[in-house]
Length: 432
Ligand code: GLC
Image 1 (cartoon, rainbow, N blue to C red):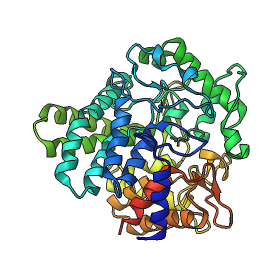
Image 2 (image 1 turned 30 degrees about the vertical axis):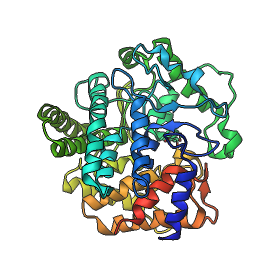
Image 3 (image 1 turned 90 degrees about the vertical axis):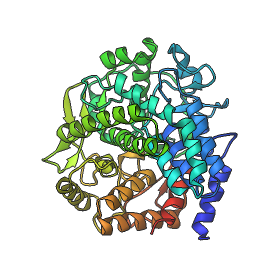
């Protein structure tokens, strides 16, 4: 076995706790929703029972209304802010009684992760039996989204916090934060004791993050109230791509299991509507890329980020549109002196190559990009994405994020021994 793969396995083994994985020692000591999915893909290559357990534990924390929280606080830890006592998920009447969590979610990757487990497993009968025990919970999660977060009934769901996007500190949110003037809260950050402050968000940015949660908490995390009052309400192309990709996977898996025609029909109805609206509303002809839409302020956010290319993974663009998109990708993000794929448009004045989601390369977005390019037969671009990804990790280590500039000789930032970096490298190393 390749040395890099051995190292990746060791990281995942070290980050395994009792029934779930932490994203990273110190910095992120709990279970995160979308991390969990990516991690399960890596675990599946060497320990399928842990991969299943990871997903089972996540779904065990699901609320009665189908909602799955973004962080599940399995253990007491005072090394993280804001923790369970701040979020107070039990304010919501349908929240889990068993687990403390946040009252927000993260991109719905679990559906397609189940299909990935099926693809990777050598024992198809066994994995399908497992999938049968959990698939309805994932379906219920999609049902929650379409019934509570698609306020215009167009098949596009909203996120109400930048932390729901997964791309927490993207410059995309700057426009929205400009419309807010939150109080200056008193609190003690913990992230900057683990990571250099210049690579993390500022205190003022945190005031905005907390203020949105305060509004949600005031209304006990009620979805309708959030839709009505949250200063942050966005239709995100990455989030919606993950939902659409997962719809597709649920359809495929239900068909393999059989006897679920009603759910398959419902998924197909959602799917058709979502893809149609996505192409109509979230594509900018001017930029040649998919963009975010600010529902609260009723305007498109005209910026290109690595989220702009996620629709390839979900099969959303037509072939012609996919070509336009890949041209934009290579012109803006694919210059010879840059590793694919910066998290934000490198030609923008908001680009910050060292700071969190404001520029650095993230391995999960690269993985999504690679798979998307493959599906549309952009073979050269896919290989380049894969090679750049492996090179970054080989050269600098299993970091949380990386500088896209090739001239840097110290390009690994954020947490080290980061779980999804390890997990997805394992998967990429198994790709031809
Ligand atoms: C950071 C990332 C988020 C991730 C979390 C745990 O907050 O922005 O996407 O889920 O870390 O790894």
